[in-house]
View 1 (cartoon, rainbow, N blue to C red):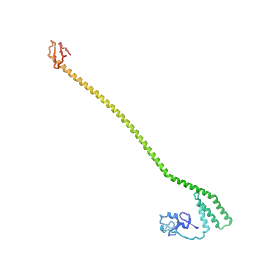
View 2 (cartoon, rainbow, N blue to C red):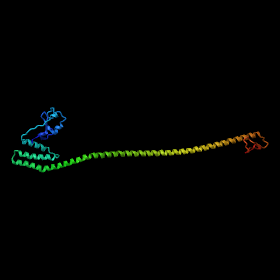
View 3 (cartoon, rainbow, N blue to C red):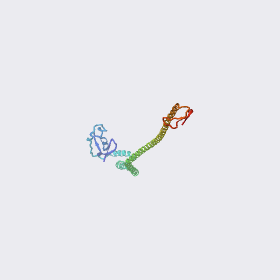
View 4 (cartoon, helix red, strand yellow):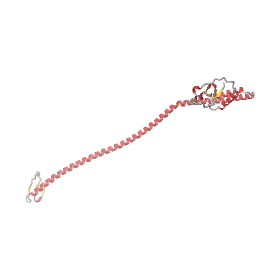
Length: 264
């Protein structure tokens, strides 16, 4: 089957893989899908409508060997270490087909076939191993993608734990500060309690002292009164006769002596 060239991705595909616009330009299915948002044909810039896309159905003639050779050459140039095993296999098979159709002598044809055989024997196993490695890499990537949500969850949990740890440390610091403040207030209260006790003691002592002073004052007043009474009695009595004088306070100890002596 004859392949056709896509002007966007520069890959070759069968004709039934192409979709054509009314302008006549067609592209492979993948590239056509990528043009859904574009209203102009990328080749001729004429308007294109998604609803008017269609396929072409042709019966191609036997392909020319030169065209096949050029197509094969392009396929060989596109081979990379990352190419899939199937692409290398297609190139090797295409070389054998093209060599079978070339109009060359038998010696050249045998050399070309030998090159194709060498490629199949030496390069294809390498591509096969590389394909296995790529498949393994994709499998590992799939596992990583599966574990990614769990890793993100673990990281989020670790961040939450770190946050809670900081909050706990902050709470401990605040607790220490409150305990220190409480201890300070307790010491101050104890000092105030002692001050109150001392104040009460001093107040009691002052009250006792005041009471004592009051009593002494009262006694002094009585003594002063008695002394005034005696003085009045002395001033009225005779200095030559000795007698006893009774005071208005009924003090039996009051005795008037001659020569101005008073016995208490």
